[in-house]
Amino acid sequence: MNIISTYDLVKIYNHSVVPVKALNQVNLEIEQGEFTAIVGPSGSGKTTLLNMLGGLDKPTTGSILIDGTDITAMKESRLIDFRLRNIGFVFQSYNLIPVMTAVENISFIMLLQKFPKQQMEKRAMELLAQVGLTDKANDRPNKLSGGQQQRVAVARALASNPRFVLADEPTANLDTQSAFNLLDIMQKLNRDENITLLFSTHDQRVIDRARRVITLVDGSIAADEKFDR
Image (cartoon, rainbow, N blue to C red; front, side, top):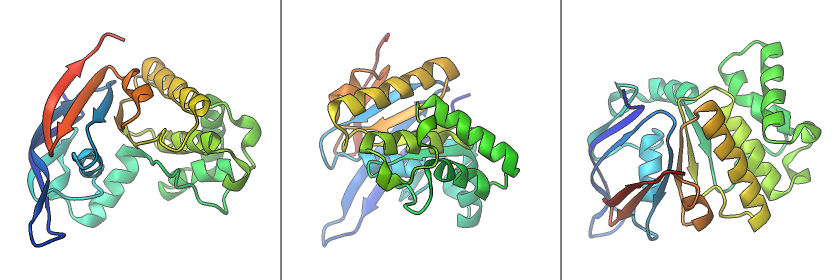
């Protein structure tokens, strides 16, 4: 069974006199273990699609199934809990909590899920080790470089053992070496642990690693290519 399936997904924004169709009849299936890049020019619908798949926004029409569950039909309270337990997020701007240390930022998701404290701390430290930041466990975000903050954000996204991780332009604010380091880590997680990754990106460095590249143009899928990488 597919992890994600969308059916005739349409999103219309009424920001002006003329409605803007951000997504237009998008039908998409994502399987376990995919490393997929969603690409296209600015305004093509990449972030809108990611927000829909993550339950952060609702389509105007159409449906989204996660493991066979229609999230578009969920009440907001249930959707919040579903997101927390099933979907990991990595944002361009990191979105770490400034007053928390790296290990506390990672633990926060598990705290919301009511993990036992010992289990929470153990899992957070294991994830920090996976992203190569054990020595930064007690540092707050302002003591970390952009690349280090994004690696903490990846660890946080994985903390709840999500069904898949959505990454919105995760390398956009990183220098070349930091971007390569981050992509090495995410590629390893994908290959070794079969973690499903979906990126929206303009970054050729990400596109070159992806095993599937979906191109959006004017809110529609213009191309869907798979690569043996």
